[in-house]
Length: 131
Image 1 (tube, helix red, strand yellow):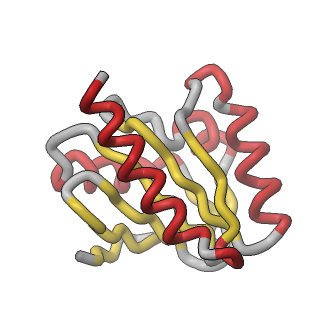
Image 2 (cartoon, one colour):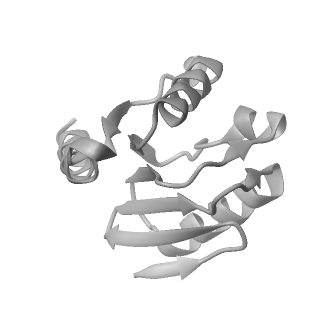
């Protein structure tokens, strides 16, 4: 089920996987992240995974980089990229947030990455339930 926020679409793919597609050219601010956090808190009741679909080019403000994907129940993040610039942005963001020890993987959208990311998230969430 697809929901429109002020800066992105949040698509609930299953009970515990949410796809995020930010708008083209937007700079994601701390306020926008808070809007996303509110959405997640209203719609997801358990541990979950994020599928970040970077089909569009966008950036994060410095403050947003420091708090992006800081959900208590977030268990895995699958990033799907479609350009080398987007892949570099993901790598830079993960370095900035290295202290969080995200459970994440990066997938090429040009090589069936969306499907691979979704399947990987499902596996990670099942594995988290077993632990």
